[in-house]
Image (tube, rainbow, N blue to C red; front, side, top):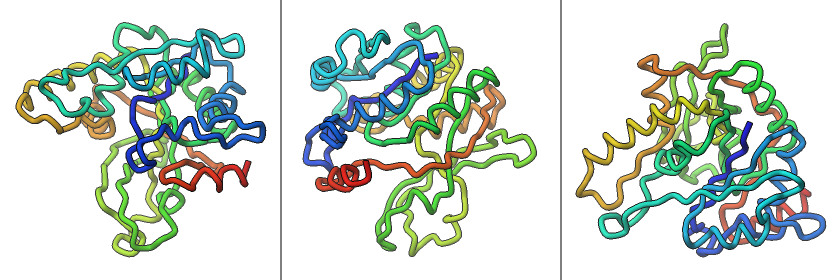
Length: 263
């Protein structure tokens, strides 16, 4: 089973610096090193970074070709800069893996710390079920403390009897103040396990999306929306598991000091 980090973004809200390389560990480890070390308490077989031409060398300098005995691969998210101002979104990033992964994989954010237990539980579930999986928690736990702050969240619908995901709905510009009824819903934290064959379904969606938006330089093809489509129309099934430990991440300058204190 592979472990995949998306590291192609340039962290605009963090001043354009790579927040994954902020030093937060007890021994000055970077955020991404702490996350990888947490993950490797589960027996992954390969570490993959989805990069771009600006980020790849920076992560290679940290992890090289092997890390703690694990092979490391760097796969670029390619896009045509003549016709686009930005990449094709999270589905575009994931589809960079098409033809390059032969095992199930867990895909995660590179600027969040999910905790050792989350990685072990996710690994076990994906290994046991041989099915797509997603981890989540109560939406309230993912919201900023400031009641008026607006965020986007993927709300997960789950069949309580089977723990099968029945849908994923992206909720835009929500807040504690505006949307109190959403706080007890289940939210995605972008901890997703996929089978290799699911990639080919996503690639078909991406190609159709690109054909339909040839003149739009900014529109993005978003993974939650596409997984929702595949689930609703029975192309795939997905199992849900609860993430119990608190997730910490970096969004704005200064957030790294809080994580340093916690670690």
